Length: 494
Image (cartoon, rainbow, N blue to C red):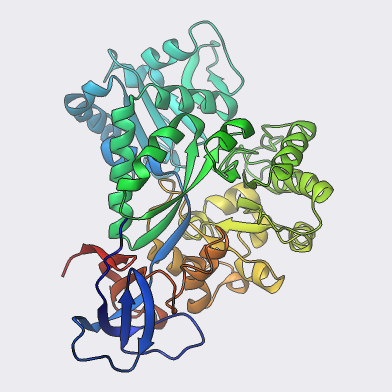
């Protein structure tokens, strides 16, 4: 990521996202912003984007980069209408994916297809028997396997979370801990070259969406592969090691840990940990992956090692468990510890988050896809949806929310995230356009200690910016036309 040395000027409708007035010229030298100016020296070369809008490059604070790339290499099931569509896609995939030795398929949503269910493993066996097949629900918290895959990972056991039919035979559906075991096992079956390709594909896709900095939630098994790739990638990747192995993280010289380590599951899979039972599943309150003691001991040790922590928490019971640990070890939050997703936040938990200034890392597209009356969140939670994803309440209580996608769970698309944040189904939680843009720019930079380098267009900051057709601050459609990282153009469709 070597910035160009020669000075250059960019002309356009520049939106710095600072208190400074918009100016028509952006002067860049050595990859950094020299100044915003009303005019420029005549001898400087000018790149003319006069008809377009220039904003700071987007920051995605929560992306599963490997899995995002895998959805570009393996079948992506978004948009299918019925199980026969799934079977056709799997059959076609066998022609191209045999070298991988297995088939992974992503973004399956049983609620939106005609049959309203997962396929049974025996149905999958009719399509593919010779190699393992793993189909992940869109949220990643449940999956269904064909018999070949099931016997490979669980040949003689029935783990917690494996669904059985009335004859006590496995249906192939795994939730909770069984799902997590299967997910890790089959991703580990991919060789290093396949993972490198997936990382590269994910980054290439991110660039086209205007992302110049991306926080990658990365499993311990994949850290070395991604670290070795960093110098060749066109954007800045901030790694959040998805592990509890403090020693390994320190050996790699990293200063973050946890990432999307699961404290609970998801609403869709009925595995997010709730204080009260699910509205559509009597007796079910979801799951916690750790005891209080296990989690506290890790939090204490990581904090003592000056590691910024992040945890996946969706339900109120999970958020409360993480807060209990933090409240015992910190009074302030200089390491900027985070809670990823931080979805079901009733007022008492909001006050506790605010007291110790935990950073909520949010994904606005969740509400766009599943929020609102009559939709999935409402079916799972009932009246509790008034407390889901309280973006405005975070701000009103002095918290800084960070914008992300959780890709591939929702699309790697900050503009979709911005639109979702301003159209929250709960009107009281809607952000203004400036606030929504800040989720993916200047506030996002603060969540990774980069607020003095990126996130706004300002003197001495890196020249990370995007060129859009349309002014998203006025509600216009924003099409990404060009992307610059440290003054170097890394994408253009013009």
